Length: 144
Image 1: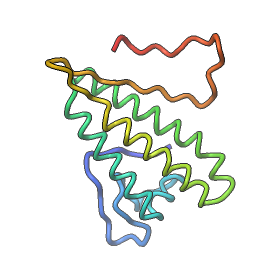
Image 2: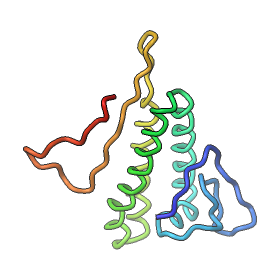
Image 3: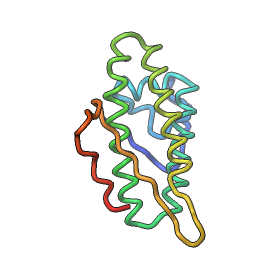
């Protein structure tokens, strides 16, 4: 999947598919990218999530930034997997699935870095594409 997360939204006026997205809509290749570029509300959610992601990155240490970037890549893969079944139903289902995913991820990013006194905490996220069964080990949190 080719989704790039950048620190700013790009507004392209030359492309008919272009909207304010966190990547170049002229290069949209996947169904998810095309959905973002073709739907103004989803594009706005993408930009809002990118803003929250950038703001969270600025608050945390370099080590935590590496972890957050990894979390973001995991989320992008998770979202593509989860919304793939919606994609098979209709474009409307795909947009609805992605919109929910973007709203949830934005909320997580907005509260990912929390200051308690002089200590800054970074909350890690884990995304799985299948249910965790009782007795399965939980993913390692990496000591955070």
